[in-house]
Length: 313
Image (cartoon, rainbow, N blue to C red; front, side, top):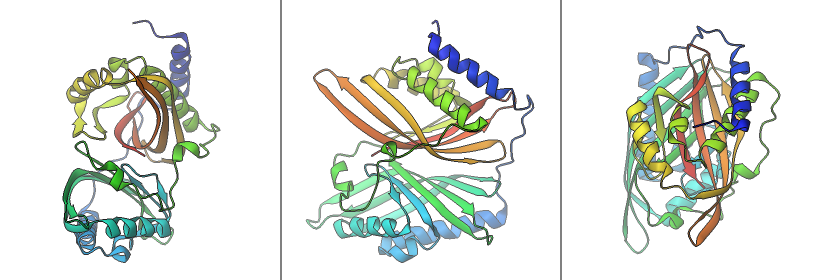
C-alpha cells in the first residue's frame, strides 16, 4: 500500500532524527536486584492490605506530592491531596471485600522503577450488590533527591467490559482531562521524534492499517489495552490489531498529545492522551483517554513502543 505523502514526511523526519543516535544504541539493563524486588514485594503486600482495610493514608504513604492517578473511566487525578479525595469517594461508594495484586514484570531503568501486574477486586455497594473487577496495573517510581523512592504515577484498566463503568466515575473529585491541558512544546530532539511518531500513528489508525500500526511496537512489545487481556509479542499483537481495526469507528478527528516525558538510558516514558471525534452508523461522539507509553531505543536507532497502557476517561 502506498504511504501517503504526509506520512512520508513523518517517516523522513523520524529517520533524520534517528541519525543522531548510534546504530549500536545502548539500552540499560532493566533487571532488578534482590533488594529492589524485596522493597516492591513489601509495598505490594502493604498496598493490597491497605486497600482491603480502606486505609487511605497507608495507600498514599509512598506517593509523591505531585503523583498522578490514571484510573479507567475517571479523569486523571493530580496530586496527593486529590488522590486522597479519589480513594475517599471510592470507599464511600463501595465496601471492599477483597483486593489482591500480582506482579508480572518489574523494570529498573536509571532512577525509575516500573511494575506491571494484575489485580482482582471484589466489593459491594450500599444495596449489597456484588461487583468484581479484574485488571492490570502499572506503577512508576522515581528516586527523589534524598535517595528515597517515590511513587509518581499509578495507572490501571480492566481485562473485560464493565457494565457499571458510570459508577466508577466520581465527578466531585478534582480531576482533569489531560487531553485538554497544555502539551509539551516541540523543542528538543526527543520531543520532535515523539511528535513525528504520534502524528504518523494518528494517520495510521483511521486508515485501519494494522500492519503499519504493529510496526510501532518492538518484537517483544506489550499492548495493555482497556477491556482486554495483555497482548505480548509480535504474533499476538499482529493478530489483535488485525481484529481491532475492523472494530473501530470512523474517526473524523484523532489527536495524540504528550504532557510529560522522562528520558532514560535507552528508554523514554511518555505520558500522553488522545481526543477522538468519531461516528459509527447512527451514533457519534467525542471521547478522551490517557496513555503511558514506554518507548525503547532499538540497536538501529529506531524508537519503538515496548509497553503501552491505555485508559479511557
